[in-house]
Length: 485
Image 1 (cartoon, rainbow, N blue to C red):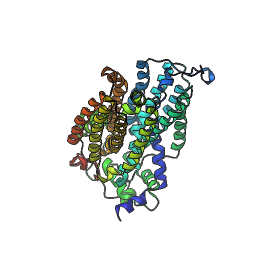
Image 2: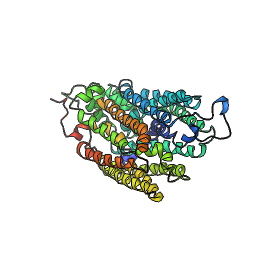
Image 3: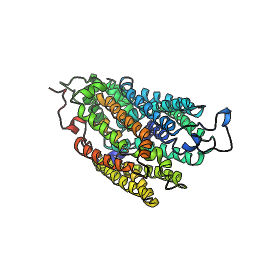
Image 4: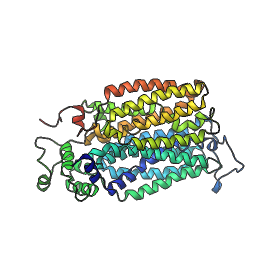
């Protein structure tokens, strides 16, 4: 059977449903990331209307200095860091499904606090709670999607983490374009709570990850779940055996006969904690690789566009900055969708190198365009910048953790990766406006992003291996499983 036929036969409507519901978490990650971009002037009372209050006696706006607004924006990333650190151990111990459901509690409570905030502290608390949910969802969601996807299509389905993140960004930027007036900004924040409630309902029909079930010695249940995902006529024996061998899970006599020869002299692998993964030379190269790629995703400057594009471009595009932001978000989504097959076709590493190279060149172009007040050049550079991000640095980092380590360490690796990502996001969110102002504006900060792109591109070339077409982490790193004698 050809690969295309095999892929087609194993992509069921139930699989698509599971991927969609699971990636509602990344959608909310993107939504909250950009929700204050367009309405910034209205939220901070910089731009006031004739109405003085919102419904239910809430103030129309919350007076804030730029530093206070920066704190409210960036505290979301601190919540994300907490969520990312907690999600790995929780999903490893209690299961992916439990962890996914837990994120929805924060996705509901956070927007409620933000929407009803009468003052800055409650708005900040809501942003923090939303960040906890987002940080956890971005850890667990890609793991779950990778574990339920057919091996030959994991790159394609893995890209939907970034696709849905972009859907969330586009949705909130579009709502912001129309509702950034009066007290309507509160409705923008409330919409996220509705999405969180819908995700909770959708997760009621989502089963536990079959890979997690195998790793926790529940082979019979894993077979039932995987058979439902792949379809009644699909042959799942080989896929189950790969997981069973990777985890050295014991099987009953009946299950052994249905699968393959026993693992023989292998011993079970225990779940790996974050500190064990960092200290162990067996896992350390993977931890360095996934953390480095996540840092590259942020330190090349994409969130300077996503979080601050309206205020950044206002000086040279005073009438079209908000609309251009919507266009940037739409282009980001379109390119991500169009390029989603690329990681499986040309490889993860190639996508990363093409992406970071393009972003570095776009940073130079954006810096020149803003420095010399060239509106068309600046707008084009901003669009190219985000388009290049969507080719590789957007989707690929979320795929790598589950491909560079075995199932016993995926939670730890993903938590390390997302902790690095959220820390880098906080640094960009908190200090980009300050650095931009201290350099006198005019896009000079993008020279720094261009240099970072060059440096981090060299890191990816040297330290990140290709995972395309590799069956497991040992094959990726070219080593022998250390469980074997």
